[in-house]
Each structure stands twice: as C-alpha cells, then as structure tokens.
Length: 230
Image (tube, rainbow, N blue to C red):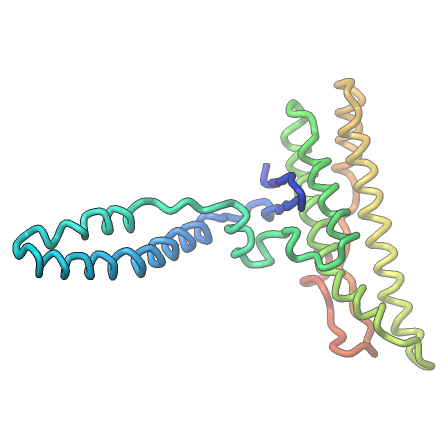
C-alpha cells in the first residue's frame, strides 16, 4: 500500500502515485542531511584540532575529526512526511496541499477508508481501487484553485455561461468522489467475505474523477488537472 496516515492532534496523511518511486527524493534528502551535518561538524572539528595542535602538537590534533567524520557518514534518518513534502505534485498528494479544511478532511477520510480494507481482499482489485483513490485525491487537490476562483468571481452579465461550465464540472467531480467514497465505505464495513468481495468489485468498476476547467472570465483562468481525466 502506498497510503500513509498519521494520527495525532493534526492528522497528517499523504499518498504516493501508484508506481511512483520515492527513492530519489529520499536519497536527495539524506544527502542534504549529511551536507548540513558536515557544515556543523567539520568546522567544529577543525577548531578543536587547531586548539589541540597548539596545546599538544602532534597527531592528537586529528582526533576531533574522527567523531566528526563518523557523524557525517552516518545514514541520516528521513521521515516519510519529509519525503512526501519534498516530492513533486505529480508523484504525491498530501494534506499540506489542501488549503481548504473541508476538502482536506474529505481526502483524509478516503485515505483512512482505503487503509481499512480487509487485508485478504483481491490484490488486483485493491490495486485498481488504489489507482482510483489517487485519481480522486489528485482531482480534489487540483480542483481547489477552481473552487477558489469561482468563489471570488462576481456573476457579471455575460459571464454566466463561462461560470456555468466549471460549476457543473465541479458538481460532477463531487458526485463521482462522493460515489467512490460511499462505495469504499461499504467495502470497508462489509465483513462477510462474499459481499465484501462484491463491494470491492463495485468500487473498482467506478469511473474515475475528471479534471475541472477554470472559468474563462476569471483572473488567471486555466485548466486545472493535466491532460483531460486525471
């Protein structure tokens, strides 16, 4: 599973795009951690070595460099959330991308329900549901700009037609996401193996959410989403 949910006072969650490789981002963060440690440890070791060289000339001056080098070479501990925050949007969706509290809670519930699927569920269908979940999360995230633009645009004469299309698209997106959320919840709550498999099959058969286009008359109007269906 590529969904991670952290529970706490402020729940944090993230999801990697199925097939995405977080390895390069994680390695880059580890390298940056080592560089930061080197910027602190090596100058301190140099100062300590210089002091030892004055007080006790000889090979003892190299001693401070031993722990400094060991500290720099130690593998850095990288938190999964840090990796998610550093990754490009095309590869990960996380709570920090949602300025809207309602949409953030909505997306988090989808993640939590997916994690609650039975462990013995059909792997192929579970993988397909995971792909649908990614599409739903990405569509919700990418719709935030359109929602904000629609909320801030006055319905001037002549603008009604351009506002109607993205409004309908948002309503359709919400309908698809809500249908996916309801079907996923049923699949989670069903404990009998037969009905649970049927419920999971119904979730996997749903249509994915689609991109939403910003109103043409809005400032900075643009297409939100990438190339048609997310």
